Length: 334
Image: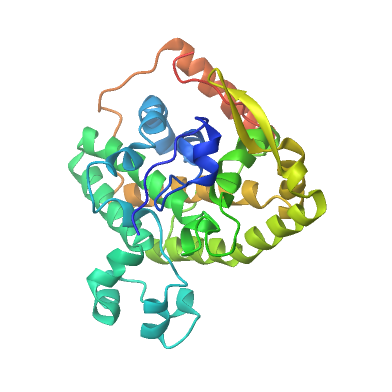
């Protein structure tokens, strides 16, 4: 049941087809984009603080994945197997997304903590990190605010990935091995330049724990189409056109072909973009909610400044987002 991290844009032969349990949802690059773009959803009273620290919350968006190699308890924080037989038995129904308790104590009482840890705890853990972030805001503890903000963005983004809600996370149960990396890494890699990431302003969440569950349920609804459309694309193009070879890091690797990825992406009808947009808005909303729940402390006196080049880049991204344009990938130190 343990997942190890996936690296964004590293040799795709290993990423797309091995994808051990716990592989990083979205890939490293997309996690960073989600955290960065979430900053632009914040209201003016909080935007200034996160703008000053946008490099940190971007670069540290993948810290939870890095911790998996050092902490056994980290992996279950990234997913929840809603189709696990243990959950179905406990709920007396296969509608586990609706039947599982929304709060941790009730969930432990129903299925035991060992079972929860075995099949994933992302919705409960994300809410726990939100609580920790609220406490950090109350204490005006800058290092913890930044660390927890980056971590919370990661877990919430994971909750929006369909394959992080199923035991068949890499198609290993349906002869579709590699679909994990195809959906979360290959498709964004090729298509992200066309995505519209203007998602509007982050709202205050009256019931944040339920908001996390809504994201999980929405992601889980998409699981069937993730597998079904991959089979449809395979039947249409055939195995000989499904894969191709590309040069990566001075090596030739076998990966999903561009025509196959395009066909699959078209069949999904914007699904990857929708889930990324949901993640961006949810991350911003949860940061904002944690700050409001802390009493809206004044953060202007906390340290942290951006370089002129970083300020210009942020201003350009903000303007592009308002115009409905796509923000192109970049390296944070360019």
